Length: 242
Image (cartoon, rainbow, N blue to C red):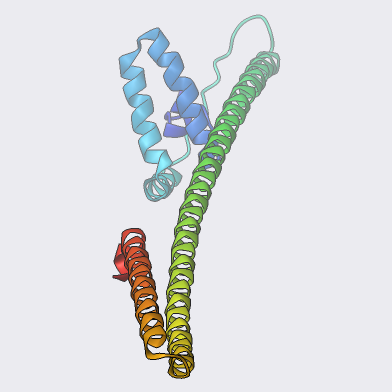
C-alpha cells in the first residue's frame, strides 16, 4: 500500500488553508503536549514546521513545493476471504471518516479555546496598559497643575511685594510733601510772628523769635528722625528696592 507523504501541515494537524492565528494556536497547544510527554524529537520537528509556516514567504514557497509533488498512487486492493470487497472498503472508509471527523472536531475546539484564551489575555493586557497610561496622564496633569499653582503663588507674592513697595513709596512721598508743607507753613508763621514782633517791643520780639527757632529746630529734628526711621524700615523690608 502506498501512503501520502507527511507535510508540515500534518505535523501541526492543520489544513493547508489554516489562518496564521490557527497556526500559532496549534503550535502552542501541541508544544505543551509534547513538552509534557518529553518527546524532544517531535517537539523539534514541530518547531521547525512552525518556523516555516509562520513566515509568509517560506510558507508560500513550501506551498508551491508541495503543490508540485505527484499525487500518491491509489492503494492496491487485496482480495480477502469472507466479506465482499465493497463491504470491507466501505467499512474502512466509514471508520476513517468517523475518526477524522472526531479528531478534527476535537482539534478545532481546542484551537478555538486557545484562540479565545489568547484574545482574552490580550484584552486583559490592553486594559492594564490603558489603565497605566491613564494613571500616567493623571500624574502628568497633577504635576502640571501643581507647577501652575506654584507659579501663580509666586506671581501673587511678587505682585503683593510690588504693591507694598508702591504703598511704602507713596507714604514716603506723602511724608515728604507733609514736611514741605510744614516747612512752608512754618515759614509763613515765622514771618507773621516777625511782623507782629516788630509792632512790639524789641525784647518781646527777640524772645519770641528765639522760642520759634527752638521749636523749629525740635520739629526739624523730629522730622529728620522720622524720615531716617522710615528709610531704615523701608530698606529692611525691601532690600531689593534699595
